[in-house]
Image (cartoon, rainbow, N blue to C red; front, side, top):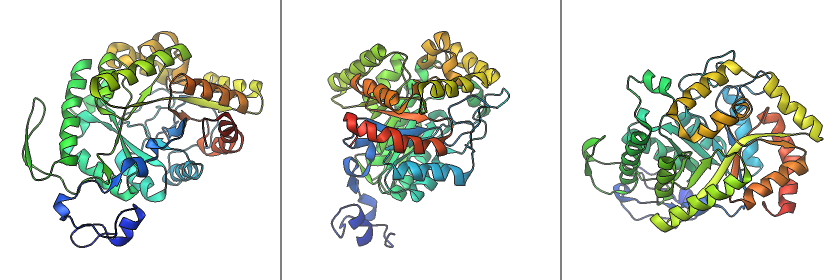
Length: 399
């Protein structure tokens, strides 16, 4: 609720923990709240938790394995609300404009992520809600305004996942040619610099860059979160690591071994600190399959593989292996099965005790959290709630 001059009412201020009135003019309001207090991505949980891909058909599995999961608004909202009730930190969607073919047309049925995030921001109370944005498809003025709007809807819980646009067939849908890998990050840096100014500058400003031009640019209101909304990026190439260390709050990494996790997380965090005087979190993603026995868990995982859509997987591997996304190079060469069961992420398969043990190992190796896929999000969240969360608390990685 706002007044006619767009300043927060007393009710809104109380909800954000602010003074009852805000004397600043509407067109000069800066951040209303500290994101350390409004956005759970900055809380003190040792191992943060989130869900990945609950806005796209088949989620993170390229498989016909049986699942109640479906891309309907009521279903994705129910998943979000249950994760919110369980205390998860984040919901991260997949931005997808074109499916990957095969017998599933994997991820081809997909909700657009800004409007998805706005709807779920209103439907939830505590969890951080992200939009995933292919930067070449969105002008910074539009994206920054949408981000600010969702941040106000959520009371400071929004996060923006920045993607450079590695899927060439999707970029071709928008009528442009694909940029070379490092040039995509040069574009991305100019894009985010523009967004930073939109979120922070008072008055108007001009933009005269290599990729963007604008005169008397302005943007009001400013985001709720200060100094800006939370930012996420999943770049793991040299250019991606540079971009993340310089700009974002959370880097998502697709890694294969705990040794590589430790090396990656320590080097990225050191780079952000030493070169940019910043702190950065690292999180991984992958498919978690938990059952009462190890044999049952392995059988469920194997069923995903056996029922896999290898046509779609082949198309993904072809695109990723062409150099479009250097972040997946090691997966393309050695771990093709991981695309079928977890979109190239880090699989965790076993009993509640084994899943917890693996999450502890990831945390000890430097991971601050995990966003997960599940074979059946809605049903298997209950397994996580009843059997895994208590063990994570006992292990000291949740409280």
